[in-house]
Length: 155
Image (cartoon, rainbow, N blue to C red; front, side):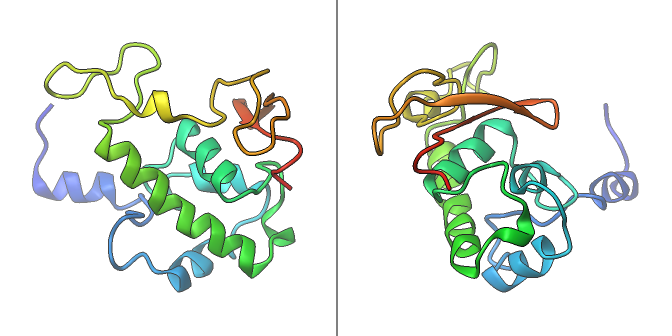
């Protein structure tokens, strides 16, 4: 459906910053995330906090950063937050390069499946060995969403 520029701006005004924009610095990430409470995964997936991170990429970001998705923000060190910040860009840039993730019916504009799914480390990998330490990937629910993680290397 078409909308006016004004309506478009209004609809987008509630979104958090674009994580791949140059203005999304580590200091900006700290400023935004420090205002939040609760589990880090829920904050990453909140579109009012940071735009564009969904369930798949939140799981992958936190695996890469070695952070347990159930950890509360107030328990994370500055070093861990820096790892998360760096992982956001790494995962999203890789996902874009590979045209996203096709777990069911997603296709890119040319009708092709996204190839990031073949790169997944934890998302929907329940029971498979963690690529980092070989322990089984677990799945639990957080905020009504399936959450995939390694209970050994994601502290």
